[in-house]
Amino acid sequence: MGLFDNTSKFESSVKQVPYSQEAVYRNISDLRNLERVRDRLPGDKVSNFVFDADSVSAIVPMVGELKLNVVEREEPQCVKFETAQSPVPFNVWIQVLPVDEQTSKLKVTIKAELNPFIKGMVSGPLQNGVEKIADALAQIPYV
Image (cartoon, rainbow, N blue to C red):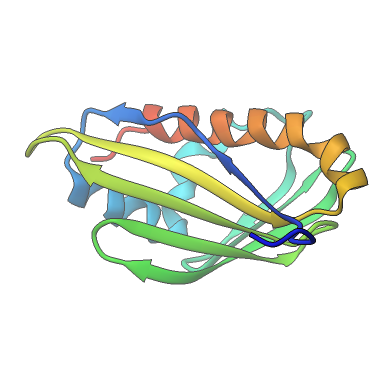
């Protein structure tokens, strides 16, 4: 990183998931599986939630419309997303690694280009958000 590099990285803690790496990857790599968690989304935090196999979009208070596209799949360990519409462009990685045949662990990472002023305003919410995403992913039944 150079002196004027504005790349900021936010990582969740590692979450253990009681499902195999393959089961978790299979579910997160096809966004149509989000249908199973639609009812868990807080209506006051997310509206107009729409998705297909490769993209997801929603309207988020104080952010506006947010749309992410899958840009890379590294089976069975990583799915990478990139914003297609967002006030702040960013990338998201969901990494899945095996613990044993029945258990895996996952981590969510967000990288964004943030100028120092914006970074000061959004660092806390982004770190909190990445942790909440990881918590939610760790609680999904990957069957």
